[in-house]
Length: 227
Image (cartoon, rainbow, N blue to C red; front, side, top):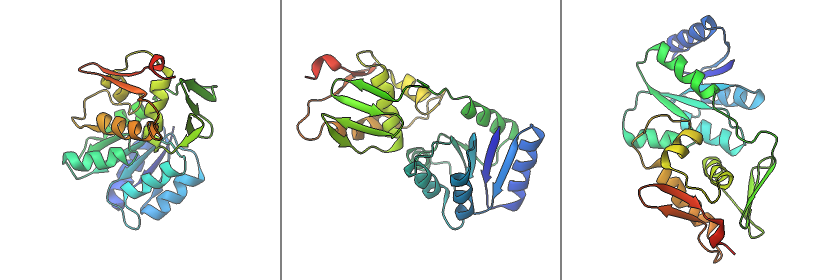
């Protein structure tokens, strides 16, 4: 496995590199945000481990730029911040997991392995359709009723999962596991906030509501209700 580690503390960076190498992985290292961003754009990595607070470009902005460029490398944030709002900021920027310092390397390694095992749904497919929605998996573009809908990377992933399961109930847990690869409850409203923004973007220009909430159960992309 090829892992990118971006950490400005030299001792921590050396500790991470040693641990990953001992576990049999290939490691690239960067000590600041600008260098880390260049490395992340120049090569493919299985996982990136990124410190939240970095000189030059902080971890949040670094991941935003990666996602805006279409780079979907799974990201685990390392952070000293323990507040819910801080976790939400990292997740909504495009992060996939977080670990608070200080941490046990065994836990970090287990989380990195979990991110690398995240399933890639529908390998080989290039276009999904449901109702009047088209999801182009190659260009990462969405159209509804012929109009382009601009989505953030995580919003795109949520819609992709709903379209794949069109007409069927999708639970909050399923979204956490299949979109965020969380097998625990982060105790935030991250799913609800993404669904709210996704609805607002899809239902513009007078289009009928596409995603229905089933109270206490989950969500349905109900194609039968869309002409």
